[in-house]
Length: 475
Image 1 (tube, rainbow, N blue to C red):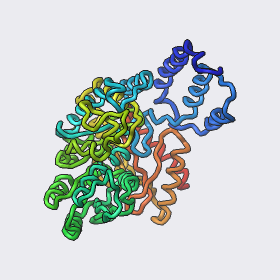
Image 2: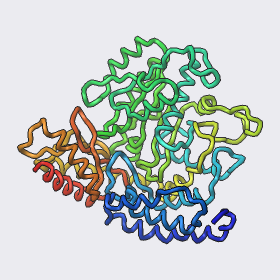
Image 3: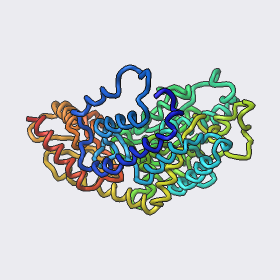
Image 4: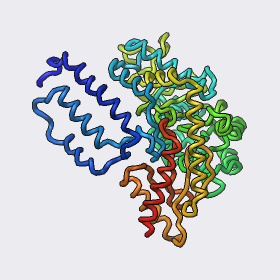
């Protein structure tokens, strides 16, 4: 096949292959290994020299489907607990297919009023879902990291403006380092965003009461008093090892008292606002200046999806701005052009799967899912506490359960190595998927429960596998 023009009549046949494969694949997820290492050999079928003469759409799709459905990591299933990775609801998957089918250039109103309007709608719906004021500005991004870039770019513009500098036009040259303060809960994606923005990854200072990372508010206030000028505070809702949160209300008080910018990382923790049982964890977020949330975690939409919300709706346009190109609209164009409100110019219509899932399940559907996950996480915590060979290391506050395998008779100095080998064994085994992290200097397991398919039975299997593989490694 030399030219795609010759395949105009094959497009439907190629898409039908995907449609036909979807139903049996999705139905099989609860019974599959999350990852089957024996199938990795199939990855070689993706390799080889660039074809001189293509095999055609149907042949290519057939091969990609066969390799992907067998050798892929089935993170869409109910037993992927590694990192904090959601699945994709049925409506979101279909919405994502529509995104690819229509292939809208969503950055400009002129290229797709449909995509631009959909983005505006879902941003408003998301603000309603999280309890943020409707007046706030917002933009969809590919990830929480890029959402941090968007929000912290606004913070950087605000901070530089207080030094009399238009940082969008002139850059950071000649300015002091922007002070950024957080607790020990701060996520690496916040540091990466500061790195991207030229502020420096390691300029962020943390203030912690102890080795858990809990915020030392008094020490942070003392630092603000010493700085004596504009600064950026980062609050964290949903820490990755335990699910705990910073006290956002007191941070908002501190920001107000010292004239600081408050940025909140709510990547998955913002979903605590959906349940009366956990809403206190996000209380005060509406007083922040910028908020980051991740869509491909607890919203359960396909990768890639993040949200950036900013109190001052004019700031994203000033932080990212129009470029003065004659073929592009001006900053004061009557329509919203989202490529001027964030780091991307070329953008998928990533609003469509979000619209589809929010329309399909609504506030009540998402509240029910979040509360089911809270119940499942609490059940796991109870199983751990009731097992003499397992040790719960932090209270179960949200959707993350932090524990380690600690069988009787194994000395403390061997536990980190044992749990590291257990984590590797879990990933190699594939029945459940959860690796390790470090918490308070200990190697731990910290499964995260955010996939819409996950139920109590999946968690009970997880504990069985942990005990089985743990006994093998300890023996």
